[in-house]
Amino acid sequence: MIAQALPDKALRLADGRTIRLAGLDAESLRLPPIENEEATLAGAGPADRHGAVHADLVVEGISLSERLAAEGNARIRPRPGEQACYAALLAAEDAARRAGLGLWAEPAYAVADASDPEAVAPHEGRFAIVSGRVVHAGASGATLWIDFGAVWSTDVTLAIPKREGPRFVASGVAPETLVGQMIRARGVVTAQGGPRIDITEPAAIERIDAPKQ
Image 1: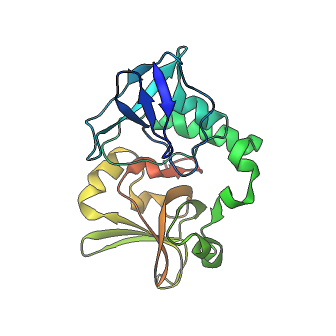
Image 2: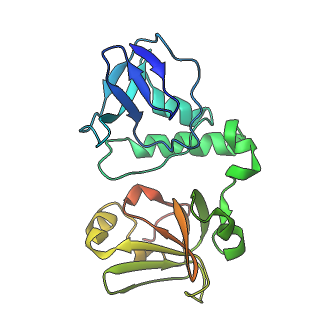
């Protein structure tokens, strides 16, 4: 049973465990009144350093994470080690966004145009979702790069650790296959020349165009 929602958007169960809903962005999370609801833990990983378990909760037979995304009450935020069903979560989020539900009716949560650095730069230091057509992909040192413009030093760039490359290949989002494609990406924006988003999870990149054959 869910005993209470905590100020940091975690949930306390009646048995004392603290649950963070896997795959969701806590900053955007809008929890409904949920105390005393019976819930079943699903996809639980190990507890984090604060003792919280990252998992989904099934309430009345429905994934709570997916329900919140479908209602426009959460953005999806892939994190290392979380056992979330990202295909379902991203589909629910996309449907809510298209319908303008919940937070998607607010300009502050609009998907930023990755082809325009000035549209992405105001998100510096915060989690954001961007979309645009990939102009270039390459590698240097230990990093794989995905660029949304021709001038890497000022345009919006995604950075992927090269050691994670095989996971992106296996998930169908190898950087070199994305050139010329419209994609949506999400992560924390930093300013390193132009706006940059460091990505470690393949689920943080979605193809909007159909994959190349």
